[in-house]
Image (cartoon, rainbow, N blue to C red; front, side, top):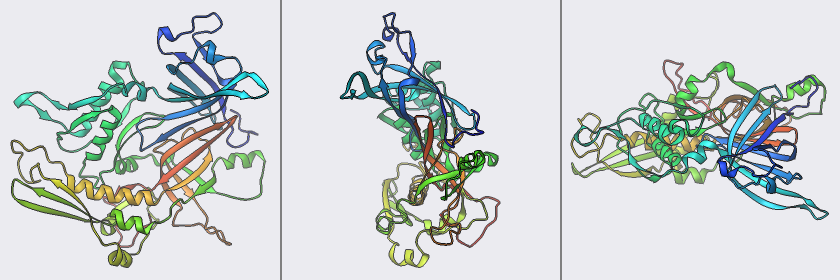
Length: 458
């Protein structure tokens, strides 16, 4: 796409092709071919991806003048292939599955030759994997030779068996971050996506103490990743910069190109909710282990107020961060510990594996740190809208500059800086492409880096 005079956010829908998934779904009339391009009759469409979701999904609003609804006909069992080009000439192709057709109505009272409806579609991997229900415990061998394996190996098995399935399923690959220790986990009648989310909540790696594992799909591929390692490994050169700018319109070609890095709309959402912090254990947590075999209990206390200082975030290193509440207020009023009770049916960390006990689960480390970190990440997200970039996907890291909303308009150092893109809703309206982003500040472990007793801002 030539961007010399194109308005910011302009995109080109190159094709929007539907085709039958099975032989008996193909049209049997000469009026229709085996596939058909709906590009000319699609008015708006969207595609959502999130680090909290194992699948991408979207919708399209269609004004059907050629009668595709009847001639093809549409049954909710079609493949959908979308090719589109953003402002910068970056082309993407999405391979999806149409699973629903809703809101079917005549388009207007003055005409009876136009039908409007909404197509609902998801990634083909979502459709393919959701056909299965898993009731199994993944391990190597049987009987006395049975060997339990780390969660990362279990994820690899699940993806091969239920997503790829010998090349019959998704064409996308998966990136899997390593986990520590064998785990005996029974999957109790779940879809593959829910089973992997279950394993993500139990994943452990001592090198990354927040244990923030996520399973998600974006427009590039699938991921089972530890957020700390994800941020640590991220390519600095690919990080894009955006700034919130409001001012008189400037329609010169040079300004249109600059506007592609503008934040057009934003919201801080819930900036702070002290009652929520009070009731959900934002700062103090305890995992209480009940050891029936040895007739004892074990307290595992955690203070996020103290521990968060040991982490770096998605920021640049020279930025300072603080928690929403002050230390004195936390100690005096938010000091109740949120307690989780677990039965200890696993050996101590320094004890050998015993018959009848499952491998060590690391409940204390995971439940305390992960829950508190996740809460504070959610408390510090912001929502922004930008013009569409095909390189910005769920899991991207971006830099944002946000002013203080007052007379001087100085940069707000509390909320400006580096963020992890948790979710993206790609919205296409006629020839315009926007992205609604939810941004979070993900944790990263500080190893061999600058240490400071000063607080740094979430």
